[in-house]
Length: 280
Image (cartoon, rainbow, N blue to C red; front, side, top):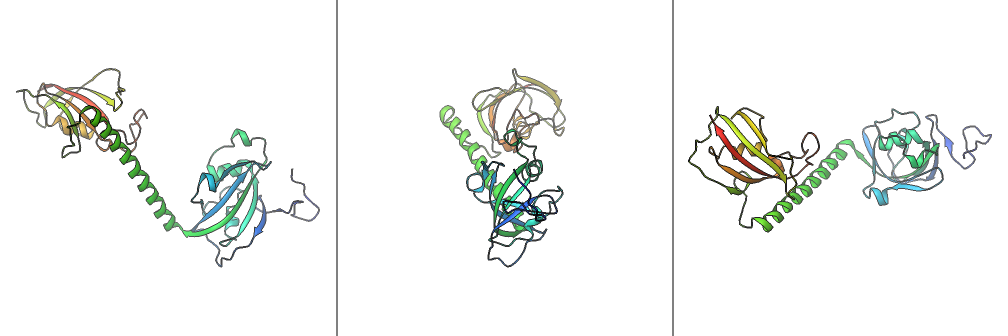
């Protein structure tokens, strides 16, 4: 518990109270020469503690690249972001903030159960770097690109594993589709403007079905947005009565966001059994 001493704006354990409603104590002075502005992002080494000094988050474990804070967010009274503008690289400061303000500021969330008995949260920071907003945005784009490359590689590995175990001779076609099986008939070829009736069922690579039973759909071929891109490509190559078993990579299926109801996650390849039952 903090106990105010008689000296105005001072606390018994060395913290001062800021006009914005948080407490602060300078721990070490750095050797930087410039203060950041609202057009900067500060990179912090940070440790977050409960009021009883239990560490629940720190950059060393939870964010090795540092805690990035944009300085244009000063909406909540009681947060310490404005104070960062007074710091230089190398400065170390300890803060104490109202618990609800702290979690809204740094995690955009309500107070978790483990901190509900705390009136204040302790935040120890060392300002390690000052960067521009444009530098920060470029770093974010690079990180997102690396993450996207990782998940795309994982998707290809899942497809390759399935093919190795089930269809070792199948290779991807020019459209990026894996045609596992296909039948041929002397039926009518499909043309734009035809009314086409199809039966199809989708599966995850592990065999789990997307739907409990095959789906039947009738539409005018060539009408936009009737089917996902990969199915449109395959249907164009089929005649009445023909069937195909295919794997669509996510970019030709539900993409980087998955489907709208969340049942298909991002970057998920889909196996389809497909049949053209009628063309008119």
